Length: 267
Picture 1 (cartoon, rainbow, N blue to C red):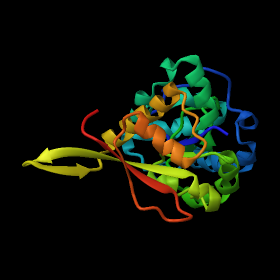
Picture 2: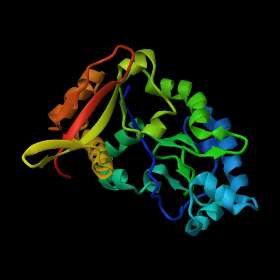
Picture 3: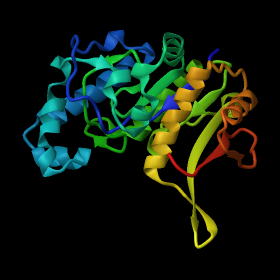
Picture 4: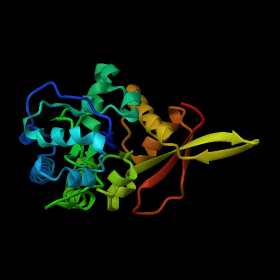
């Protein structure tokens, strides 16, 4: 089994799709189709309704973002794009999927899953339209998306992990939708990026969003370019060190994912 790489989505997305309309039956992880249909219906109904203010409040949108409601209301008829091209945030800019050589691109298609408040999880080749649906939202008829997806994703992502290692790079809100348990947890590696700088001669470390996202994108790109195929969490950690990342590992707890700190000083 290839390493399973879990990524967060990004708020930044392509402005429009360029291909066929959405077809849920053609998405990967088909076990999620009923859950996807329920969330999609709830989101479209919310955004097509008469109460714009309530819809914006639910999705955390400002008055100036009312266009996102109109976009969501038309999701079923909108043109789609592969998920690998849809997301355009800092992590995806650093990953730069479009410039990967063929072997690395094939590895990305096999390994990467992108979390989503609307779709649950997507492969890079899954075609979906641009949307706005944060995982922290509570949709009418569905409830809190984090809890909703936690129930749906557990068996699906456990099966997707197979017997191989898992590199979990999701942000906290998306990580809450699936927590690896048991044997899968023992094969899972989570990563925190720390920016180290010197203040008055003393090293100071902090979590900085831009460093975190860009470093995670570069890390995945480097693994793909190197053709790394680790068969265990130990081999995955060793591969990161061989790629010259400054890795520090927290004390391990049985039955819990391994926690790594990647220390960076610049981008």
